[in-house]
Image 1: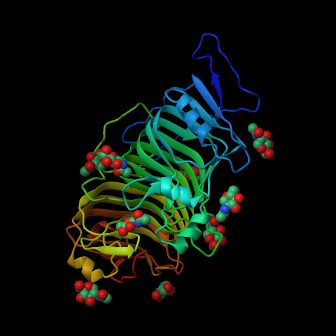
Image 2 (image 1 turned 30 degrees about the vertical axis):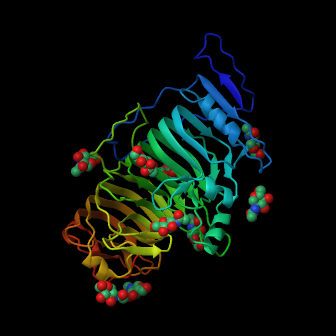
Image 3 (image 1 turned 90 degrees about the vertical axis):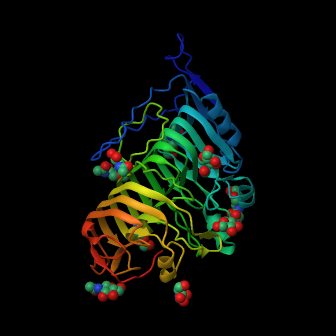
Length: 434
Ligand SMILES: *[C@@H]1O[C@H](CO)[C@@H](O)[C@H](O)[C@H]1NC(C)=O
Ligand SMILES: *[C@@H]1O[C@H](CO)[C@@H](O)[C@H](O)[C@H]1NC(C)=O
Ligand SMILES: *[C@@H]1O[C@H](CO)[C@@H](O)[C@H](O)[C@H]1NC(C)=O
Ligand SMILES: *[C@@H]1O[C@H](CO)[C@@H](O)[C@H](O)[C@H]1NC(C)=O
Ligand SMILES: *[C@@H]1O[C@H](CO)[C@@H](O)[C@H](O)[C@H]1NC(C)=O
Ligand SMILES: *[C@@H]1O[C@H](CO)[C@@H](O)[C@H](O)[C@H]1NC(C)=O
Ligand SMILES: *[C@@H]1O[C@H](CO)[C@@H](O)[C@H](O)[C@H]1NC(C)=O
Ligand SMILES: *[C@@H]1O[C@H](CO)[C@@H](O)[C@H](O)[C@H]1NC(C)=O
Ligand SMILES: *[C@@H]1O[C@H](CO)[C@@H](O)[C@H](O)[C@H]1NC(C)=O
């Protein structure tokens, strides 16, 4: 690691940058057509300290110690640079929840080791549906960008999970308690499981994230959701692409009233530290495209009866609410369901689900400006909106959904829905859920 001090911090600048060391400009975020609920202001340039991180470069040796040192050294007002054309191997679980006023410029590639035994024993446990992660990211005013790649080395996990469903596959970006932060301009590849799990966070913008990763063996890359959010408020996802994943965005309500509306706006540049949990926000997806996946915009809820999707995924019971969410502007291509509300998640017996309706309410949801084509899987359906009772859902709206199945149909399965607010072709014909 090399630390560089810039002139802005010292009367006499000491500049130790070599010709090949470059610093990426901060991404310039633009937020049209929707304005953010709370404006995001660009923090000052962090010129005081820059830590360029070295790597062993052999593709095998763990570079974690230099990474952790750089994060500590340049925290509180500096920036760290993962250099262009360098590969950084990470073989140690690292807690990055201490970050504060820092820019992380990832130009090179970060690759996680394939040691499934180590990771299962040492990954961070999130205490929710067996979620674990390679690292835990949190703090205030953290900007991560740079055009580089973060690679989860997922193939070995897809194969291991096929042999043992209890394999704890880490998520690529494990986020816990991140506030007023921006993650932009990154390519994310081969996550063992979800690409992001965002917990306990407020005002986080994800912009221009390019997600892809497909299994090269006969074992599918399962549960590779783009973003899963939990107890978080003010999450914005825009200008992003997911290819060949699983769910695009899942909302996990959890066992108690949580999930205040999440903001997902296009917002202005991120900003001053704003730590209060805001309660009146909606979430907007702006300009997200999704290819070869199972679900577009989806809210799924376990019913009020014990249910099991599989041995390692069980639920049922629990209340709370999901409110004030807008999904706006999504382009899909070969996705099984474009829009989906499923309050019978994990319960194949619809009768049983309806007998024990979910006490978790879903209200003020908008799906708008969807384009594209679904897969054949649920043809003639393109979506499904199913509530376990007519009291569980209110003010669910759909407008301007220009999506067709491969044979040209546009049907949506509707159950316990007020159809007058749905500009869709509702049908009672049930074809199941993913
Ligand atoms: C990175 O690699 C590319 C292609 O080999 C090369 O053109 C470029 O100069 C390299 N950049 C740096 C900073 O080493
Ligand atoms: C794990 O990665 C190492 C280093 O790249 C490689 O030598 C080894 O073959 C890999 N093991 C498996 C099972 O893929
Ligand atoms: C979120 O915050 C709560 C309360 O501080 C804490 O108990 C929990 O471990 C945190 N993380 C997750 C993933 O819930
Ligand atoms: C949508 O996102 C893509 C991918 O990031 C980007 O290339 C394109 O410019 C964006 N379009 C708009 C209208 O923002
Ligand atoms: C929904 O979010 C908007 C901001 O986008 C806010 O003005 C409104 O008060 C929220 N409504 C509720 C019921 O929280
Ligand atoms: C989706 O999958 C199909 C069939 O495997 C493939 O031809 C196509 O390129 C994929 N789409 C994208 C955007 O990669
Ligand atoms: C995962 O969670 C389920 C409950 O949903 C539990 O029965 C199982 O033991 C957990 N698996 C692991 C590996 O922790
Ligand atoms: C579904 O649940 C109902 C109500 O408990 C029961 O009568 C029925 O046999 C179940 N159907 C199947 C296919 O298990
Ligand atoms: C579309 O395909 C489904 C089955 O995949 C079939 O039931 C339906 O009749 C077809 N509709 C048209 C208009 O071809």
